[in-house]
Every structure is written in structure tokens, then in C-alpha cells.
Length: 245
Image 1 (cartoon, helix red, strand yellow):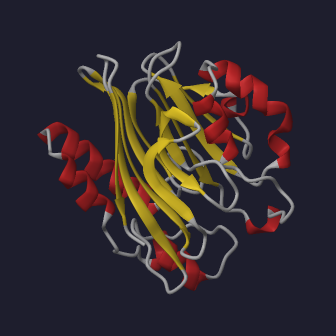
Image 2: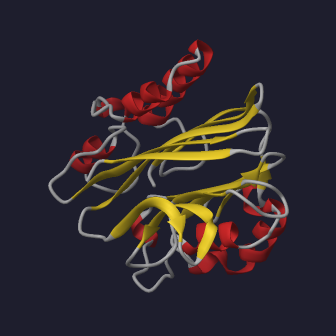
């Protein structure tokens, strides 16, 4: 998952609405969003190579519907081939019965074993961001205040061009009461950022340029799915996905 924009406790009756693109190698096998046969309360796609998932919802449980999503932190100098798959951090939360803050306390002692990640988890009452990179309150799990947030492969609200642009478009769509198709159209933007605005994450400028698009298209890697998730105060939870590759 490489881009998520989400509104937390901004819309009346809708504690959470999130729009996201998952970027991955086309050769990595995955199943489309649906209920999991072994955990039918969980709805989302599934990584068939490493296990786990990049984003999903749990429609039932002691705390009501829940949400979890993860993005990688782009730091090639810190990459470890032997690190465990990060998708289990999402699936373990969705298949368990943890409160968000308790789950963060549970995983924090072993978070250093994973390559860099951002994790956003919660329910209708609380949403928490955690990352195993950078310094700040998020290293203990940062409970989010109401607002509109953006997350790519840096830390939360890092001013990467596609985060800034998509947050602004997302806010506009919310104000308009736009239909869901408008969010998927927003996620289909293939415009690359101008070079002076690109982040410096330790990769070649040509790749920084390609990865700056909201929807990424390269011969072997790119946006695989676009997803819109909504948690309602009534207790309903909806995840709709469009397959790209």
C-alpha cells in the first residue's frame, strides 16, 4: 500500500472514510477483496506470497467494525531481505480482538524486526498511527485527532507531492458530497510531480519521478488496486475495491 488519504471524525455519521492505492510488483500473487474463508468477519484482499494483507476491515467483533492498513517506509539503505512480511501486522489486528492502543503496545517490542512501515488501525471510537521509523509520539502509537490525513511511503502527512495533492482533492470531494466513483477517479491520476518537488528517499531521480504519481504505471511494478473504505457510526463497514493489475 503506497497511498492512503483518510478523514477521521470529519463527516457526520461517518467516523472514517479512506481512499487508497496499493502499489506492488505485478508478479506478487494476491487475492481480490472478499471475506476470508478462515476468518469470515474480515473483508479485504490477501497477499498470497507473504500472507497478511495491506488493508482490510473486520465487520464484527467485541469493539464493532475495525479498520487496518499499512504502507511501507521507503528507506533502501535500511532494507533487510530476511525481515518478516509487514502484512501480518494488519491481518493479526483484524483477526484478533485487540483495542488499537493495546495492539500497538503488543507489537512495539518486535517492530524493529520489520522493514520500515506505517500502520493505521482503529474502530469507530479511536484511530491510531504507528511507525517503526522516525522519532516522535508515533513511536508509542499516536492517537489521531479529527482531521484529514495523508500517508504514502514517508511518515504521516509528510509533504510529498502526491500526498499534498490528493489530500486537497479528497477534502474537496468530501465537501461536495461526491459519489464513490469520484474517489476512484482521484486515485487514477497518473501525473508525475515536477523534479524540484520530489522527495529524496535514496533512489534514482528517474524512479522518484515515476513513483510520485498517485497511480503508478511501470512495466513490472505499479498500482494493483484502488480501494475506498467507509466506517459508519451505525456499525456498518464497507470496503469497495477496483483491480488495476
